[in-house]
Length: 189
Image (cartoon, rainbow, N blue to C red; front, side, top):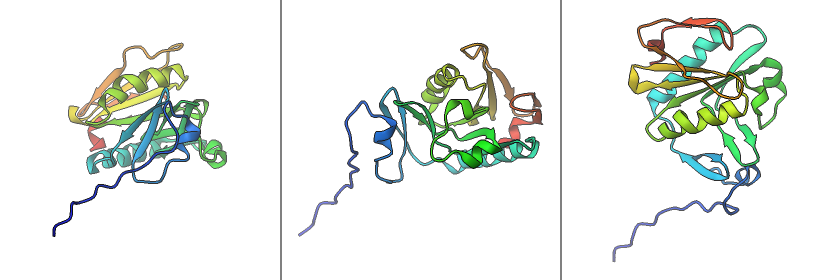
């Protein structure tokens, strides 16, 4: 007699709207959980191309970093009790990197970087842009891999990011924030 295959389910503690404290009680089930206004955002593991872009972005940032700043990957960023994100890359001070435990806050972040993937397009293009600006993160890079790649640099002007500057593969991005660096976005893949 044949048996029906079973589907494993993850049972999450708590009820929506979720808080960051609820999130900390979730099982380690391989999913990447983020929160926006208490709503759960779930992403699959990044593709190998996505991971390469993270690695190359880290290398570019690390090589140009002054002694007091350092890029980190996939940090926990607690924006509010109901807003929690995991940027692909973030630049923080070395002192902060050494002393912060589990959660970083927006005032620690000099640069947040998101590599756009098919499952995160809307989040990275709109939701995170608005949330990072409102939280006061001075610089946000949105890297669109399917555009060659293209790096969109958002720099805080008051409480918002004006229209970003786009740097396409094959051109030189000469940036001054979070520190001076020059690179070709094509080097990200």
